[in-house]
Length: 461
Ligand code: ARG
Image 1 (tube, rainbow, N blue to C red):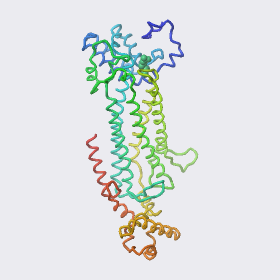
Image 2 (image 1 turned 90 degrees about the vertical axis):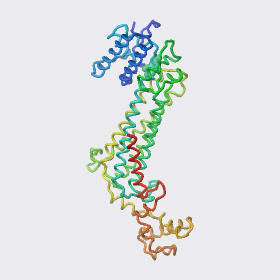
Image 3 (image 1 turned 60 degrees about the vertical axis):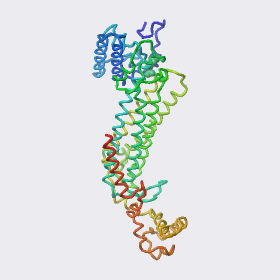
Image 4 (image 1 turned 135 degrees about the horizontal axis):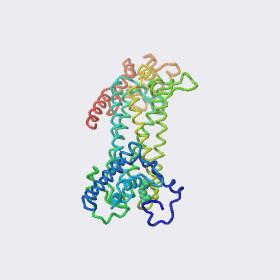
């Protein structure tokens, strides 16, 4: 017979194919440190309420710490017949310290144990992700601070619309990553609840002290319902949703950088260290890092759909389907972490082609709105002014000129409200600096936004 913890009830050995199929060790071995930390807290709690002796608890603790060392030094052996990290550690503990190891699982089930482990793991990772997002936002602020006079065309429908400050465009991403940070902080609150002591599903007959375990593990509170405790993976779904939204931002940012670095735009140049060449075309410098970040967003959306689908029809409480949660969770953590890291490293190295951007802002009729606004200020109703400016655009197009290249006489043919002060209004800098409405691109606004972001982030870090 095998030495499975449930073998009392079984008369047949588990089929090898089933062992391989049900095993999750190659995935969940990543949880070893949290599993050990959780087990140590559990055994201390058991001793504290006299379910085991203090001596037994310290034997268990020493044994677990030795296993942790062995895992870290690569000495630990994994075997499908032991299914998961929880059983691996428990079985090894029994080999190392004998019978007393068998007391560790008192008042505990793998169902609440795994719930604890993933919460502890995710809590650590979300904290790292929050720090990573703060670093990324700092890098964005620095890039903005260096570009408070860099003018670029702003786009809608990927058609030139109105000039904006490059730093205003970048601060839009700052806002997105700020919301991502907030979302991570918010989901952290629901990760940070201690499920152990719920046992298999109904709680336990032993006089355990769940709050004591929670305190040892730094959880501010314990879960309220034992069935929910072992059945709940909302906190993983919430994390991956937040990660997915964050990846939407990374993907859009990537798309902007890819477009801007194209030969046709030439607004920026990606650092050589963050681009790749082509094996056949010598002239190529490809934005592969940005493309991969954009592509990896698809991976995380997939993780989210996996989690939602795994959970959606499960009857309460624990079901083995839930073992699949870790694949999606680890992938989302790894992918998001890597994207944050690579962007934080790459952004400071971007070469910004200020002249090219300014030149691009001076053609393509980005000042047509301002021509209409000029007339509105002089008393013409906006709709009429819009049509008047439209006619001027059509005329200039025919002449192969920009609006600001028309002569005063030519412009006056569209309205006699025009006088020579119109040309000043049509320059990119003037267009930007007159957009003083709250949240608009005027230099003063952008400087204030950068200043505020710097102040806020100093409080966060
Ligand atoms: N490896 C399992 C998981 O990740 C641990 C819990 C197993 N519980 C059980 N009763 N089979 O979900």
